[in-house]
Image (tube, rainbow, N blue to C red; front, side, top):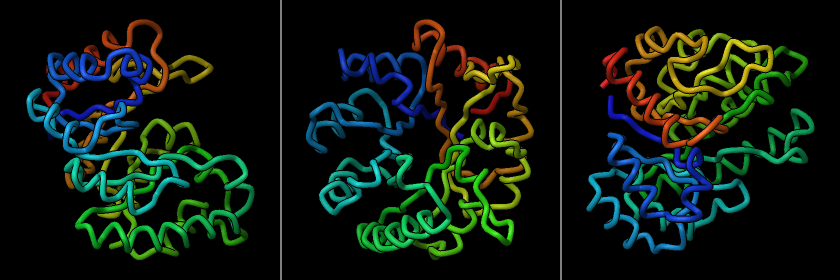
Length: 247
């Protein structure tokens, strides 16, 4: 298991100093990167900067309406393995039928992504797990059932799985090899179930990792940090390394 970071966690820092933020990430000890924007760099430039810092581009989040061939080609040159649809706007998730339309579009994109030797993933939140059809299938299950597994895999967010009322461990067992990437995100014990540093919350990451040894990429993410995000991601890294000996 290589330590990875979803750079959305550091979005404000990257707006001010993109390369300096990557350098800080490398100093902390992270190696795998999941992008959420490219800082205006060309794919070749960014790939070279990552190489110089000892960082590996593994994945990138691309908004649904930007999943086009130019973005796929950029990702291929950058060197990632995964393109991820990260979120659906409210008007795109009003009914099961709307999720079916999204799935049909992802089916088309997934075929194009395959031609580049890459893999398309879908990253869920809570709403895909709370909306169900008349048969009791979740919207996420409906989506995955409409797209062949070789065109669409899953990036599971363990925080959002638990937030929606599911056991992340149970869902990892259910989806099995369909899930190839993981957002390592913890949930506080507070009533608001806030984001918190990995190891500071209620999720059992030792068990999560043990039931999903097939996961190819693990990305720490903390959507909101109470203070300095660099302190938060360093704390999460230390917990995974020194307490769980995860890498």
